[in-house]
Picture (tube, rainbow, N blue to C red):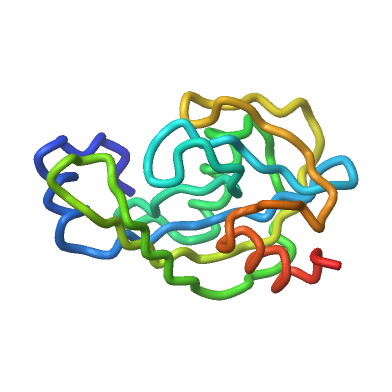
Length: 150
């Protein structure tokens, strides 16, 4: 698995020309679902499920566990795979790239316990009880497909 950072110029070209394969986690923790307030585009300021890109030669399950540890500071158990979701954003982190395209693999996981510890991508982490008012439609789709939306 490649864990070296992607050079900024290369990442720019990827965002400009290629859909990004990622994992998005519906994390069941302490009776609710964990959402993070995004610090970076796309979706800055939105409450969103934790997630991240899949690295070269990294298996999806390994990406799920890595993202949970890095973004939340916890270990998880995979409960259910929801499938692939196509997320088309009208923004990116680059001024000259107007959109960002994800092929996100939705996965329901259960926390093995522990205290949530947000990374630098999240201003805050909170546990919500669905249904959650004013949540982003992509998050609503995950929760509905995970049978967590009443």
